[in-house]
Every structure is written in structure tokens, then in C-alpha cells.
Length: 279
Image (cartoon, rainbow, N blue to C red; front, top):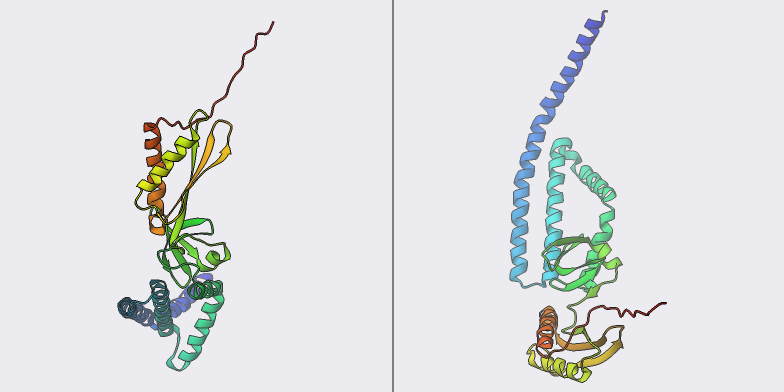
């Protein structure tokens, strides 16, 4: 038997295998793709319908987002299993394949179980909820969604941050929205040549003039420290949590403009140089 004859027979053999494989699996693959597309649309419709129901029932937004995310992922997983079944599994072995697929998925994605469990813990213990302003794992922003695996934050400059739920609860969580009222702390530096009493009087007038500052809370205006080139005053007022940033930035601007009118000076770093005659 020469080499050309051997190669020809080998090519014919593998060509027959390839043709047989194509004839066997092409209809199944096409059927799986069609099934996947149809059922994906059906699953998406079911998910959207359930999402509307959750909104109509006025369920807490944090719980609603979590349930919506859970339902969506379960439906997608079922669609994927159905597509795989059409390609490789006979009807009689569907149950075995279903179990095998879920075991494989569970082993491959075991790291997500802790994220899921952490999401449940967030729902139960409520360290934060949707629309809360929080700081965790080195990130600062408003909670947009609590999903089954992740927490979605939106920063003040409109960036989206996706934090795994387990990471969020493993870190310390600072929730700026949990309390209804919050204290605004400002440090005001004045020159040593300025009157402390006058500066305190001006700051008090500014606090009383701001309508969003809570009148039933005390104003704190104290001398905190005598610095190298300045007297440092601490200025504290209480506001509604929702008004915090408006007041923080608004007071800063108002203090600068008012101090300019009252001829109160903001010091800047400086050095005194003494020259001696050397002979």
C-alpha cells in the first residue's frame, strides 16, 4: 500500500465522520439556537412582567431590585440548560443532564455563592438600601441597585461602580443617609490681625440667615487651634441629610464672600526672614 492510497483512505474516513457529525448535530445546534432565542424572549417577557408587578405592589425598592435580579438570572439559566439539552441529551436522560449541568455550574461558579449569601444578608440587616449615600471598599456613591451578586453605586460625578456583595459587607460601611439629620463641619482660618469676636459674630449671622440650617440645633463656633500663620475656627451647623451637600458648598461660598465684605482675611502660608549685618 503506497502513501497516497493511505492518505486518501484516511481523508475519506475522517470526511465521512465529519459529514456524519454535521448531519447529526447541525439540526440540533440550529434547534438549540432557535430555542435559546425564543425562550430568551419569553424569559425576558416574564421578567419584565414580574418587574412591573413588583413596582405596582410598591415593594421596597431594595428588595424589588434583588428579586428582579434573582428571577432574571434563574430564567437565563433555565434557557441555557434547555439549549444544551437539545444538542446533547436524549429525552430519557434529561433529569440526569439537568442535575449534571447544575452541579457543573455550581462547581464552576462556587465563588458566587458567597456574593449571593452576602446579598441576602444585606436585605436582612439593611446596612444600606437603594438611594442611600454610602462609602465602602474604598468607594463613595449612591446605591442604585442591590442585585443578587453585586451592589451598584453611582458616584457624585455619575460614574457607575459595581461592587461584589461580599466585598461590600467585608469592609466597613459608612452610611451617610441612615440618619435624618447631619452636622456640617467647616474649618475657617482667619488672620492673627483679625478680631476673633467679629469673625464669630459674622459666622453666627450666616448660620441664622441660611433657611436650611436647623434652628432647633445648636451652632458651634469655637477657636480650635492657633496655627503658625492663622487662627483656626470650627464652624458646625445641623441640616437635613438631603440638604447636606447644598449647605456644605453653599456655606463655603457665602463665608468667603461675607468675609471679603467684612474685611476679614484668609491667611496664606508665609515666612518671616530676618537679616542681620555680618562683619
